Image (cartoon, rainbow, N blue to C red; front, side):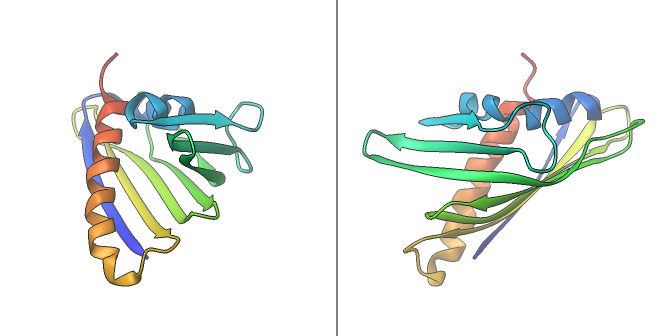
Length: 146
């Protein structure tokens, strides 16, 4: 399993950063060659399922995820969302934590454990570096002012 940990700071308040990061369909806007479908009715809650389909044509895979912890920020406090990846190709979990930052901004902590079918454990450091790069760009894109 490859472990990914990254942090980003945003000038946006916690509630806005949280909304930007947990609007699942928006992830397709910042991750190339990816489409996101939400399989459950809004609002997001424990049990919400969505699928990120990445690739082109027959060279694509589905990454189904289920929300297992859903604690949106309240009263300026932190928020936490934990997803479990339930695919046959990509497995693991991801956590998105958004906390208040001094001066009214927010700090995002993204933790992820990834297991990719047919990728041997010896390549976990390479997978972790690739994950930090890809997820870092995605988080920065999602947090960017529109």
